[in-house]
Image (cartoon, rainbow, N blue to C red; front, side, top):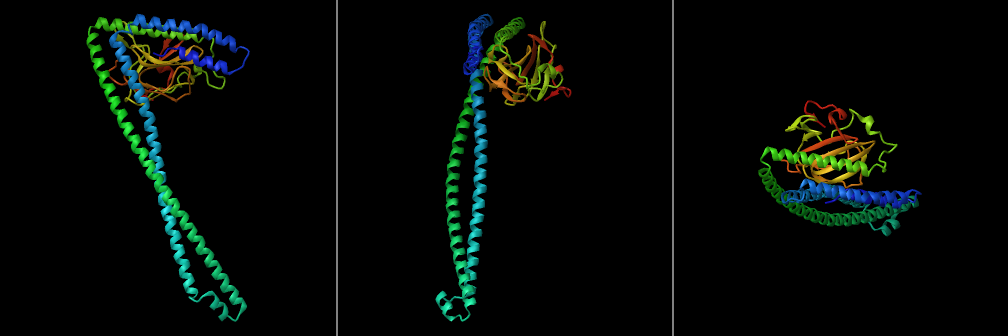
Length: 385
């Protein structure tokens, strides 16, 4: 499993790239933090039971689904571009065919004009004419028509060659499109197989946690793990600035942030969850595979699977603010990546053992959960985004 060390490594590389006087000191700080992050992740794994058989199987299956879904997204983009290219080529082919027909028609007109001028040979016309001006004019006409016919024939040959080249390119692009479609079908089959495996694991987990007390213990453990993770992130990034002077501060966006996905609020902040537990974020029900977007500029601090939250993305926005996006089907970003507002960062999913697709969205300030509804644009009833 990737850890926050990915973030630290990327920052080390970034520090190494710049020859600033404090670069060596910064690298020393990051080196010292790496062991703390490693210890933090190991402690979470050991105390949460992430290494139990079912949790490990669920993690592996959902990470595999994430990889396949991400590859399918790339393939979808390539297929769309390929179809667009084919449409362009077919339009070009049609235009070339039309131009060729026009050139041929023009050539026919020129031949007909030459016929109208007379069927006599140039020498005979030259000898029969008495007026030098007439002779000169007739010869000029003949020269003009001759050059025009030659030019039209050259243009026709060029159009024919372009037509042949375009037809050859169309066949090549159609072969590429067919190969992409086969690859896409293979990945879809792989995705269905992984999803079936996941469904079986979730069913076994549901049977294992059928007792409400056990489920409450598990959920409390998951929340503790998340809090431990967030605290560790905050400590690890204390000396690494995130704020960009050119960007609006997160603290100034209260009530103006976009929602990360379009859907319905099915669990609101502070609502009862199980036993004494309440929701420390919101759940947005949304179609699986829809895009999840960052709500503000920041840097990815965590992008991995965490028990209870599935494929989880945490973005650090500076000044103690973080946003959390959980239960994703696939993650597009890795720790250390920068994101912009409304940039796609994941796909809606049900990872973490959920039975319905949706996005867990949380906001933290100095480690404390705050109500996302107070920071995002006003919902229309339960509809957001």
